[in-house]
Length: 184
Image (cartoon, rainbow, N blue to C red; front, side, top):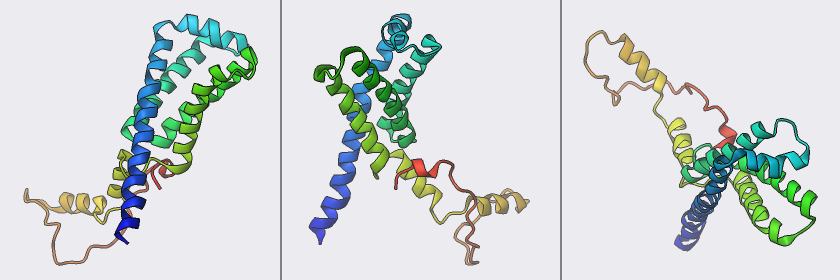
């Protein structure tokens, strides 16, 4: 039993952490390279696809890689960051196929980033992420609305006793937006 608990929880979540951090850390420099010479990137990669607003789309591609990578590394809004990366990799794969055909040397790195982002979207960030911590804080038994209502009704400057013997009503004060983007 201990063996199955260890392998299911610790190693699986550690594997998600490694996948997120390595994908983000290895991809982030691509976004900074795009920002370094945005017009060159737009001329070389966006204009051949005949997409409108090539400079604006180049900035979107660069920032989706930078911000998406940071979100993966931190594990914060992880699925949203992975979706941004997946979109950029989809266009990059399309560009590589249109301009060079099925050249494995051009497609292999793009396909790996695509697969990593898709895996993170489908599986979630794991327990070793900020998403999981936020989800646990939101789902915890402490009801923030009850605490704030008590402190606003308390006219004296004394702290509110959270461990009172009176039972507290269990109401859910709010739902975290985009909860589907948090860990499962």
